Image (tube, rainbow, N blue to C red):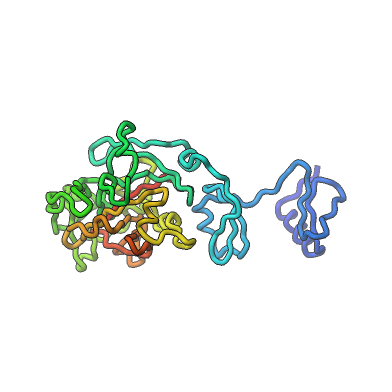
Length: 337
């Protein structure tokens, strides 16, 4: 048997393509390509394989060519790049998104803010990502209590969850005792301080207010390596989970492909996102509760003094929002690949 090196095979292929207008690759002798084909792959017991990439690997392809095709392993779809975006040609349908995207994982039990809680998982039929089914701080799942199975609306206060400063752990600063869709417990708003932290663990549960002079951060040195670091610093999510990146949020919202346009779309998605509002970085007060949803990403903004988040309300949904890290926003965790 004669074995050819990769470079020799490549040179032979290039020579063949440059010498003939048609090429056939066959496991049979003297098999000619079909007259209509430039390249004809011929076999009775073998197939051809296209490039197989995960969603994140696909998004890392630099300057894809028009009509580039791949098999998306995350979504189990054949996709083609046309007019500046990926389009699905064919996808396998899954009757059970949890089984398909979350590898059979249905529940996650973990310690949060000093207590054991149980959340469900949800597999996105849009991206293939595996998410927790509720915001951090939302009511714990109880099989015997239907009110804990999922939000009844985007203003269901049981599923608002907590309001985090970017890069802080679940040290108590984030806890909100919701009364209704317009207010929170007053004692929670009064737990505030204007003294910036000098390290990643402030050592207290106060919400740390900031100003423009402080560059909107709750730390004195504006350290960027927290939720976006490797390993992650102050990760509030369970082991194996993390705060999603800006790109992961954008993919889920589908802004490049007729995606979410308002908070109704965000709630109608697999994630059923609620509108807890946000906490003002300068005064510590809750704003836009019951009207607007703001969710942190792990991505640092270009100026490196803020971080990116996704925002939606009755009239809009957008990703290109840079928020001061001392501001308080919701957190939804995504599973590591």
